[in-house]
Length: 254
Length: 254
Image (cartoon, rainbow over all chains, first blue to last red):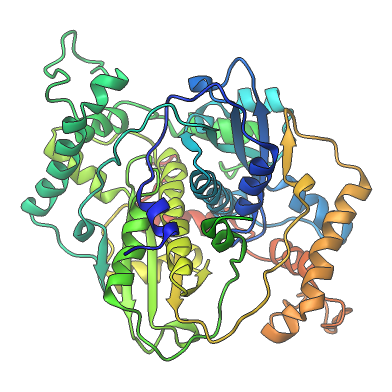
């Protein structure tokens, strides 16, 4: 018999339909305070909240934008007569962790209170726009958004890789073809059974082809991620520019 | 009255003394499976586990190394006749999130079962060594380690910034001097009351000074992070080399 926290963790699924119902102020506070209590490197995070706005995805009542925040560290250091010297790449690697630990605690806290959540990865691409919209100072990078509200759907828990494709004792194994194929089948069958991509209408098209070889009868997770990482975000420079626009210098030309 | 998941989240503190007691196999499985159920971008994670080894910090029974894993994605894509084109910086930004969401769920799961945990941020610096030790393939970067075991200490919950220094509605505010000073005082007084740095013997020395201006009576959190980010990891190139050694090319020279 698993405890209720484990049951909350194991029953997570992203929610994309929400009730027209506000989230109580106490619950919002509980969510953010639970987030802040995550272990941290240097509390390099800030959260912007929007409530009951037109533009929140899935008509949800709340949208959190979780940012890597090195601006506050700088301000604190100035007060102590110190100057920030750590390079921006190292700060980002630690800062993304800080922000993600906080975000994930927020997800768990919200779900433990019967709320639904969904991450949006788009800030990594739209950082410049969000910086302007939220008036973010230099050295603040919005890394992920989190939609929260009362769920109006009850989807099944989504598949994951088999445990033996994730957890390794003492060293990283050599995978056999069968290991990889088994992991792929677990994912693909799981999403196909749920008719996941058809319901979401989320097929990514193949740029080089006018007509698709696949339909929603056979398009599943491994094809979806292949079309993403096989076609999108190829330019290193484009990503660097987004970070530079937010005050993180990674080109070594500073 | 907060539910038990919230109580688990809010009572987190890192544990640095462990009992000489094994962690049950079922609990290890629960921890990792709870980790895997976190929301993910592309399951870009792998976990290496060491058990009951000489070299685990704090004599804890278990050490997990949580890695950003793009190697598995590449393998999956090859099987589908796709080639990875996304740049390594974007992959890292998403991959660190995947790994961190998983790691944080592991922390929460472990603590809900009475176990203690402590993150170690050192892999960001020792990646090359860990790659060799664990035989990590190309495009796997160890981002954080997690010590787990039965706690032999019961420290208080550590302070955090005030909520109003973290959560902002609609836009990022302009901080007054008082806002910053209040946040600093909350942190510093909290750690001083606990005599945290003296107990850990964790003072970072000032490179440019033979004698320190501060003692453990006044050395606290804001000075600690200032000495870290004011003296350590200044070279962008050094961090890039660590990532390159693990197969992530960020210099744009590829």
